[in-house]
Length: 368
Image 1 (spheres, rainbow, N blue to C red):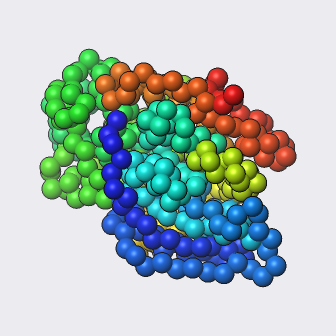
Image 2: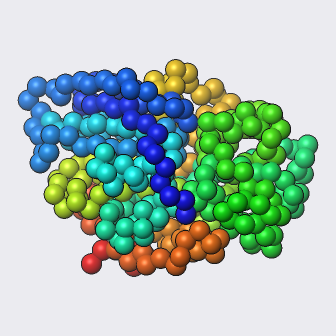
Image 3: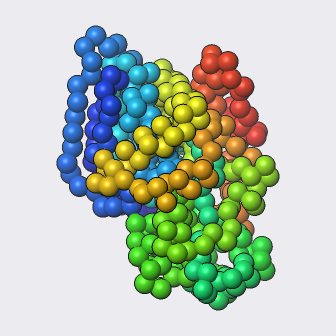
């Protein structure tokens, strides 16, 4: 997979439990600025084993657990007097770089960069500690140029970044069609054009791409521009479930501050529960968070179909992560990895048990 790129953000905030929270990080797919905002923790709130926890996530709907958890104060509530410093990222490699550098402690991230970060460090820099979301990825095409899946051959299709989760999925789909593409260059029977999500809609409008394999809300933005969903990636997976967002933690932070990790996981579990019990309120909350970052909310024709295609859950769907690693190997972007130890689900299962929920499985890839 591709090497980590320079960090693309970091506008940061500290957040408190008792107030609605405004994110001041960069907008969806936008460049970052240096406008920081800090707020004080409510008087009397008890700190855990550290003063703050640095979390990272994308301003994407597939990361709505983090967006809503911060926006509604559900994460901060579990942390008491330990403040959250939140940073947003535009790409997985930059978030992994931040984790390695200690700029963040815990992050919401896709499976491919998590696998890449784990293998490149020899299994020493991170653990996956929870799932967060499934689904929300679609192949959207220009219906005037592409009438069927077979018509994708010979066309220019965008993915967000070389080696990212959607790029790997698309390359695997191409291979299963029997077509040939050089993974690094993107050249072959299909032209795979690596394009930042922030400019993919404009690239589509200009005609420089014929479609895109992208996460939400980019997929629904393309549909709003006249594109057509020709394939939902969920349809390629058993039970229509595959991991799109995990929660990772640096191994050193997990060792030094298990109480903080457990509190964040408790907040994540409660956020997912709230999202699933209040889908319309949660959708509005996620949109408010995106508006706070970008200056405008997503219109109904974008957020409504996008939201419906994402499932928020605590299960990391570990078996699908292993399959995605196999896809990356087959594409030539990754040497066959040893993923034993990539998961540590003990803290999550402790939280789930306390909440009366079913424990989750690591598919044999747990830490010793």
